[in-house]
Each structure stands twice: as structure tokens, then as C-alpha cells.
Length: 302
Image 1: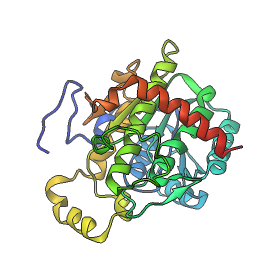
Image 2: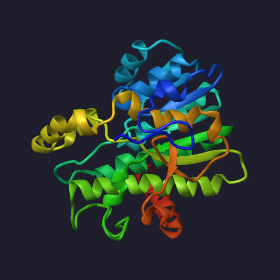
Image 3: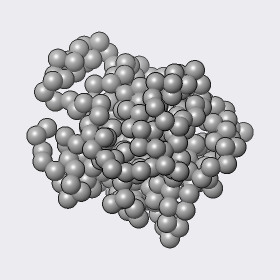
Image 4: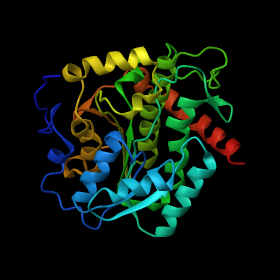
């Protein structure tokens, strides 16, 4: 919590304002999911303030528009319900129709620690929403990514809490066993592996993909937690949690800071390169996840 700055010149206490200070982002277009609350909302505010055109996605266009109306800068509101493939495809089509190359896609939205097993299209909801939804969105927009475009995937240190075998390919429905935190960890591990495999596939193009841990922030993401866990989080907030501005720093850093240009396939925390779990470095698991994700995407959008 009291860490200093790292090699990047930024660290635990750096904010989204700090990491974008002095940058003129005029002419850049950035797609952001989960723009209406928490660190997504702060990311929207700061990137729009610095001059970028932010395509702000939320579950409904009304929520996205309300977020856009509350900030200063050029914005476009779009609906993107990540748990519904039709909504994700419609969002991608709307973005493509704008005809603007994407300088960054920030996969920020997510759900966390659902107390009971919830399924979407036959798959455990956290895995489907946090990973498959973003997988469909990003892969649908790869042709719209600018020459040096960046894909930024918000993961979490919670990926360390994934099941012992990593991705449970034989239990993606959650029917065999379900744990709120282990399944959340699995979805966050999937985020890391997705960014790693995408980076490999983008190699040589100038386009990049990285994942990150934003820190622990008391935001609306905790809405699904049971009341006892949520209360405990609130009690400890002043001591252990980042502010929303600090929580948004790393994704803003990866999306627009010049020092990250060309860096790909890495995992960051506190605006510096970090080391994911052994599963998060498993190239075979990443390749298998991509293959399975393609199959799921084809299945649910058929």
C-alpha cells in the first residue's frame, strides 16, 4: 500500500490524471467498456479530458449516455451487454460504422464473486461475461484497430485464486463445482491468457495487447458480493483500498502513455510490469483457451 514508484516513474499512488499529465490525445479514438461506474467512469473522464474521442460502452445506451453527459470532451455512447452476444455484436457493428480506427480498446467491465452459480448461455456467468463477452468484442474489432492500436484487458491479482488446474475446461458451465471467488479468479485468469495469446497473434503488426491488475478499489464491482464480505471491505477501505483515480491509472497508462508503445504480452500492476501466476504464463493453456473461446463464440452467435 505504501510502495514507491517503479521503473515507469509511476507507482501505487499514481492516478489516471498523473499518468496522462501533459498528453494531448486529440485525434485518438478509444473504446471503453464499463464506462458508467467505478474506474471505468474515471477512465472515461480523464481520457476525454485529455482530448481523445471515447466510445463509452455500458449495459444500456441510457447508462452510457448519462456517463458521457457527465464529462467534458468528445464522446459517443453505445450499448454493450457483455453477457449477451447479440448486444456485443451490435456494439461492434456500431463502432465499425463510425469509421474511426481504434487507438485503444479498454476491456474494463466485469462482474465479481456472484454468491450463487449463475449461467449465461450455458456457461458460468463470470467466465462468460468477463472473458467471452470481451473476446467476442475485441476479435470483432481487430480490423478496426489502428496501426499501433492497443488492447488493454483489465484482469486482477485474483487470477491467482483460480482453480488449481487453472481454466477448468471440463467445467465451464460451473455445474460440477462452483465457488464465487475461484470462478471469479478463473475469469480473471482468462483475461490474462486472452491478452497473452492476442499479443502473440498480433506480433509484427505494431498492435499490442496487455493485461493488468488495477488494485483493490471499493467500487460498484462489489455489488454482487454477500453483505458480510461487502461490509468487511467497507470497514477496511481507508487502509487497504485505492482511490478510483489510482485504480484507473494502470489501464490509462497502458492505453495512451508513450512509454508503453510496442510493449505487448505483459501483465502490469501499479503502472509497472509485474509477474502473473504460473498459469498466467502458460502458453499452451492460452492457446487452448483461444480455441475454446472461438468455439463458444461461434456457438452462442449461430
